[in-house]
Length: 248
Image 1: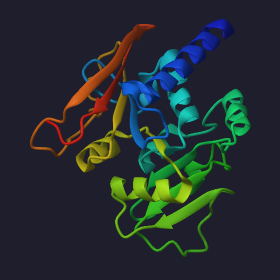
Image 2 (image 1 turned 120 degrees about the vertical axis):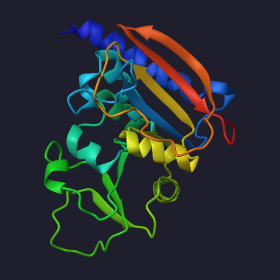
Image 3 (image 1 turned 60 degrees about the vertical axis):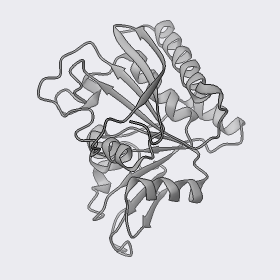
């Protein structure tokens, strides 16, 4: 297990990388961004034994939290939210830095549950105070549902990623949103043309039968990406791409 100095070094590296990637291409935030943050095996599988954590290294975990620290909101699929058991989103030091800068201490956690069949007890079991917004097409007036202290349910006629992202920007001022998947949500964001960036960690492993990173982009032509940066650390490759609007 890494010692404290190693962890601190990973966090410093991750924080600098996330900040640098936000201004990649000469554009200063808060330009609206939807950044896919994913880890995959060499054969482009998104999980081992059903969880992405099986592929994640200490630098990858640090980078994930660094993206959360700079983001205004984090978008994640409901099943991924239940499976991965989200707890404290960022370290206390990052929370303090956000508060000092006049920002909310935590990025808002966003999820999509079309039928509002999310298991709130399971989702909030790690942290009942998660700042969570659930987007749904279902009737959200059921007073018997048990929610956490900072859970908001938003009903939209269509909870497609483009509509959810647009509402989050209007409702919460969320200009920079980190999208942590799962794979189907990432693919839907690509199909809708709302994904602006892809931060991907390629882990030194072969996933075999795990889910593919992007199950089906739904596009007849390839989606063009521009490589902004790539580097190796602790055996993994960290690459950042921007999605070229309307190009293939």
